[in-house]
Length: 183
Ligand code: 2AM
Image (cartoon, rainbow, N blue to C red; front, side, top):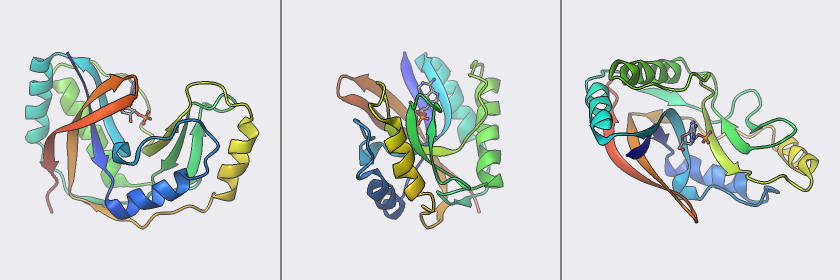
């Protein structure tokens, strides 16, 4: 079985902006810079043969590229409300991204996978919070001060399939395939 997902990698300039935001976040564990990504579809733990089917379906897709801005109305936010689970940087409204995500999900279902039905909220997770914070309001205050965060927009000309291995030291991601987006 392979734990896999599709995501956009983050170009170096935007990655650096996100790393600056990560500095000083009052949370115990940050996502390491090389693991920062924008998830499109989480496939879960699947058989290698099922992954091959999804890969073929994604390879056959023809989709145009687009631009993504990591910001949005709230820019930075927390999933989980009063019980924070993760800190993220959101992406601005982007029809190209929404279309790509919907196509990937549709193609994965067409290849026989059962996926979670979650609304797509495009984001890059900056920190995962796996135990209650001593002072969640401190985090809220910290993020409120950076509410105007915006990284320069970047052109998306491909997406990628990743394998995820969960270890004691955190997740390790390996790129398995890369899919170009056309003009
Ligand atoms: P997240 O960044 O919001 O946590 C690899 O695990 C990626 O798949 C993560 O970026 C994670 O999103 C996303 N993902 C979506 N659903 C998931 C799930 N049920 N379990 C683990 N990761 C999930």
